[in-house]
Image 1 (cartoon, rainbow, N blue to C red):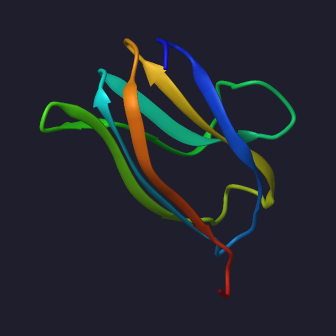
Image 2: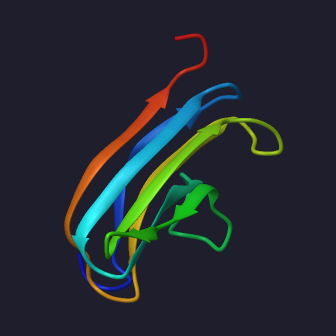
Image 3: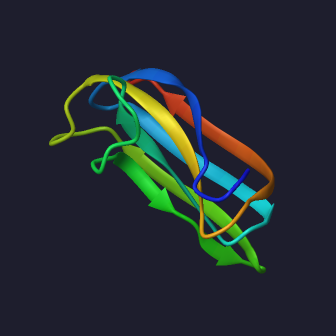
Length: 102
């Protein structure tokens, strides 16, 4: 993944009570960001359930858990992964979205 490149990882309908889990790492690179943007456009200034990586053993890693709630409104969102401050190499891990009540 090149610097400032954004990968769109799909569109999701999020509702209050849904659970979001990020556990993603890269073998090389400086920083990455994961989050959601409204489904109706490119990556805006406002993003939701967003996390920037921390360095663990010299590698960028994003780990976080969220429960969808107010003030974020239910609706359709696009999940993104963005390389920041340089390219990322060998990105892997998991992103799990569990609908409320499941």
